[in-house]
Image (tube, rainbow, N blue to C red; front, side, top):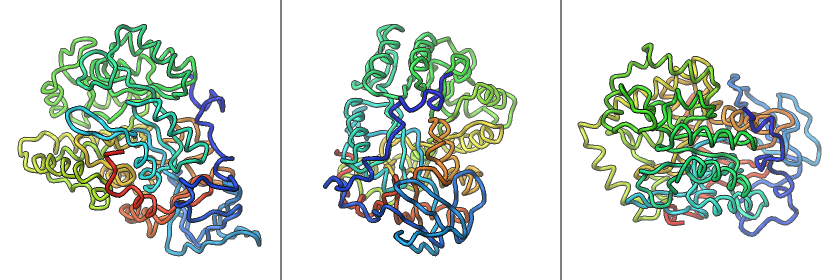
Length: 473
């Protein structure tokens, strides 16, 4: 397969640089910038570098012209550098999240595009690179990406996924239903030309649809992911898919007598997953097949957590960002979920945590996302921090969770030579938090500054600017 790394910088993910250091910043960006200096030294800071290495205390990170120049305990600081004393703080790489959206559920299988609020919330939460996990208004997503790249709007670098590639059967009017397999190939060809750099197949595609998408995308150096049902994970791996979304609780592999190219009944899917032993031969066999085929798995635990009775709701900070009507809709539905004593989700969620841990332990590339859909409550930025907390609940250390949310995502996208870890020569995409997430993962919520290409953004100002409007625009 042709990866983004091998395709080189002709791809639009090879972003960045000049716009971030323009002499005059856009008036839509300037109010949120808190640190802006050609040369900058972050001193007396704890460094979690994203590689999985133990934290390093009392370090200096030297940044010049948007890139990291040196990291260590005794870095020489140029006399013209702006110096920030970050005693008591930790710096880790900007998050690289791979199942995000620029739309939000409006009820009854409808969605509102979030071109104003979501880019700001993602950046405020520490996300400096994201992949959209499917788009509904693809031109809007491409134009948001362009504006961010040019420095006229704040937000993370975006790998834009084209429109959902889906067969008939999905009750979402904004998603096209494929006419035939040739239609699937034509979608890749057209949207590649428009600037999409990833493609997502959905629940009712056939194996021939998926094969056509993989061939067309790989020929252009792009990657293919899938939220699948009609096609099993094992079949998708054999067809060359690069990534599978949501982990194992959407896999149809375990349904007995599954019909080819048909999505099983949801009750049969649930029953099969409830009967699955995460440590058993059937689960291990599938995990090993995915690892051998080098298929990544995207963990999206926050959206599943909303389905589990007894789990904590979205935080007040996240709810405050939402349009009041949207917040109330989420809370009404959540009140019903919270008392559903027949829900299968407590067991399914526990199994998913174990299966993701097993996948990573057996050599699989586990990456992170949030999927701000469902019935609501998964709010960008806040949910990305929650994803790291849930990975720790799954059994990963804080340092491992940060690696999954940073360097693993960069490796999947093929941009780990530039982002995803803290090292000399890399782009200065960094998150500064109060405390020590290696010891207390909840400290990832205490974001003080987010650096993108060496420019520091104030998360509070970003969040305050969209308070009460997320879910609307």
